[in-house]
Image 1 (cartoon, rainbow over the protein chains, first blue to last red):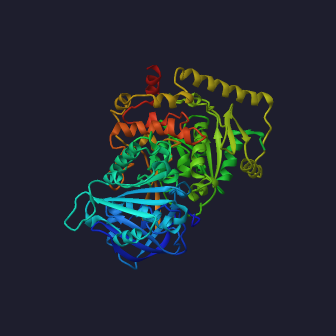
Image 2 (image 1 turned 90 degrees about the vertical axis):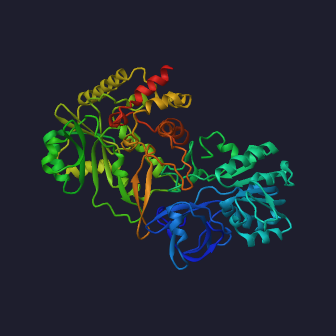
Image 3 (image 1 turned 135 degrees about the vertical axis):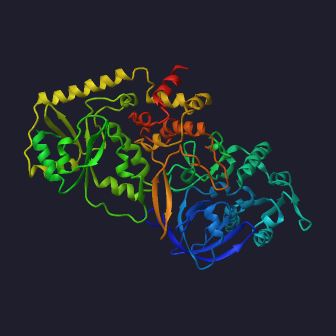
Length: 273
Length: 334
């Protein structure tokens, strides 16, 4: 924990707001003091006097003095966030929960499947794997979005494509004349990948419906349940396993997750809702 | 430590009159048919209710008030003595402590409130219609989480120390009053009374499935029974907010990066709703079922303490007349 009162946020200066798509912005923050997190852990981002919401940072966990949080405009907290400008002050609580199991990805062919704003937490993982690329055999990143305009982190995609061990494939539900990559829902990319499943671990992050069909497909392809990792989206309010809003069976998603292997959660109620 | 003391009711009341100068003393008082904890003043001392279950609000509200700022933490104004706590509420503090004082994240507000209280538990010498603590393995007299036990029996107040804090309070009282050592016969009478009430509870709740069976019954049930029992539920959340073991809360922002915590209930619509719109507990019967799964299946998997102490408040508080014990009888009989 970064401070003593578990409910008190760390004040953070908003350095810059980057427009990633018509509905998604990245907020670059400088916390009052260095902030450590493990990739896949989340924070509560506090808009003073308005509310707070859980987000997994999209920046590298190796950077301690700055944190990027990429946010899709969805509810009243994110609506106010999207109106904010550089120079304003936000709060951060956390980091909370269990992130991506890096140790399970080492020496493996890592398949990463992201949908929509699910790229945000995955960018943090990709940065981490990029810095430790000698420890993985290969990284295949599949990304699906609604449209070319909704595809985020365009410059980073180009960067990733220049790393020899990394392969990037993208698809959009609806293409326009400028689009040269795949068309269709995210799972169509799984038909195109070249991965040795017996030596591979998959990580899936995206909207619930996308995760549901991706898991189905990965199971059909032969991925064992324990080698499919998901970052679950529930109403994580306190982040401390106390307030009860994110319960999924006996799990507090905020504390026991948000990253779970599929075998841990497959029998829990309403995992895709 | 762990010693019996006795004094006349008159001396006890005189002693309380001295203690109210140094402590905020809360004890049950009757108003109408109900009793509840009130801040005791000199004139209310003779009206304190002894050994009768149970205050309308559970002990947890002293540790988790309905609303409290969790960032700007006020120091407790003065030490509190909570007097007349039934065993069901003291046992309920176990799961509250597991939740709020766990080693990963100690809740500073809960800890502050908990530490500021001296807890005086009381034997139940009578029972209410829906009391069923013994079904869940709880005795109708204090066993844990208290500093002193108190009983009024035959016009005499008996105290039994359970902790350092309790022994210190006895020392404090000794400045103004003289305690006696109860005879073996007097102690035996207290123990006989305990046995009598325990048997009364067991008799009243014959056939009600105990805590070892409730989880299995809920887990194996079909949705029809939850639809049936939730028909009259109006999602008021009374069952959860009045429950001594329910812990859920809602955080609300205040300007200046402050936060206020409110007691919350999983029976309110939108409890698990996320901003993107998914709401797994949207149907009423699912919310209703969720509360039973939480108490009797999931919490027992995750915590060592029981998540229901058989106090019966959820039955008394329900404006839809939903009776959890009837539900369990039906589950057990099918």
